[in-house]
Length: 410
Picture 1: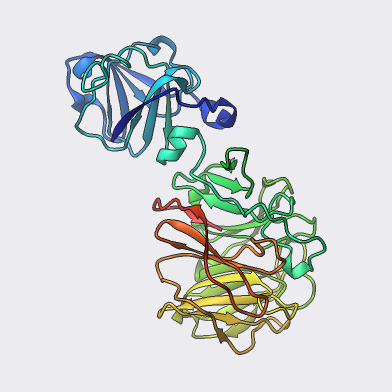
Picture 2: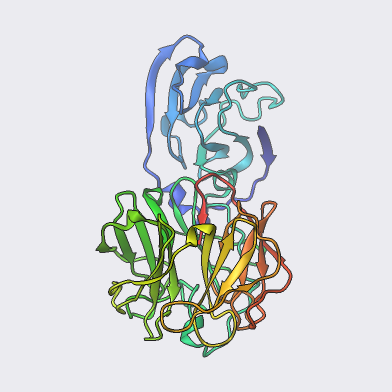
């Protein structure tokens, strides 16, 4: 798909990260007009129509094009990236063209096929993105807004999680398909748009990412990440939405099928970790308060019957951290914490929870002091407000969902 737009809003202030990407333009010698000389996996622009003349490979966003400014007449996108080409530098101008990934064939000449010469030899900047939204705006697709309802002051410790920047508003973290990690702070601007804070790239190297409040005692929310070799890392939070340099917790965590940061399960005031091993045994790892863990405690076996775990905080109002788990029949169960590292008798929760959709728990989203749950329905994220008695009420639509293959929201 390609589209031209008139007078696209300039968003340069929001895209400094994308604009500052290193220039990665590589030149090919003049060659005969042949689209096949553009390598597979590349986005290429050409000096002349029909893929003629000099060719350049664009492998990152370019806020200016140097000697290629106003010299592009054709292109082909054989990459997995979306691209937006603008008539002015800095991703602005009166016109632009939006180019989808893997456009092996189609209307690739800027001098014809409906462009009416508007864009031929008039391209001055090109932005790439792993989603259409990112190519358009310079940041990941995120319109998360936690309804602008701040949480009540003075919440108990069991409820103080899910807020990376300490502004009293529930937020989310999103690992985008390209491995970039974004903070979604839950706040919107005057035009009801939300913009994420880029934390960093390379997070596709991690096979598990979890968070649940302050684990190292500095008062800010932290993130745990397991890498492909099975090493578990603690990323201390800055309290402003970012992360400090990581600290190694230990190796051997590839024996765990799922890891979940779960709050204080043992009643000692320190936040703990739950892990389900490949045999289906669930373990509590009591936190030390310094980011590490003491000797693990067996919760029980048979947990491979569950295909998702989430730690919502205190769902039933008894002051203890609880666990929710979804079984293969789309039933969600509440496992009330007993304060000793294990759980009481489970209680069935309302609604069906499809096995191919995530179950998210970041505490109180609606600002009433009670923890909520979230899930996606047909490409939209919905909040299920907690009742404070162990249940949830009907869903409320909250944000569009990025359904790219490697997206993880937590």
